[in-house]
Amino acid sequence: MTTPNPASEIAPKMAELSANVLFGDVWERPELSKRDRSMITVATLVALYRTEQLRGHINRALDNGVTKEEIGEIITHMAFYAGWPTAANAVRVAKEVFDSRG
Image 1 (cartoon, rainbow, N blue to C red):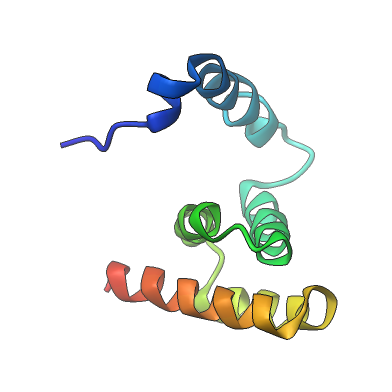
Image 2: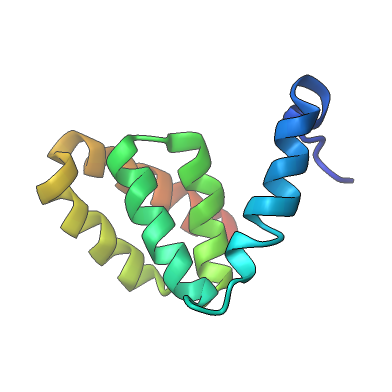
């Protein structure tokens, strides 16, 4: 069963732009690998305290070849730039994702 995308119902144009521009174009550009883009995105979401988006992008990062250890290092690095509480929250989110993947 597919989880419905709330953006499709509430903000269909945003959902369209996300699918076609962000994930259909930006994430497919060859200048950075998907692995690199995942590391950048995880770091940014940690810094901005975007918990819900972080969860999905940690999953994507793992799928794109970023290791659990690398995600831990990204979070540790960001603790010094984005703040300790922000990083502590990211650790909790990462643990939830790691545990859900087995």
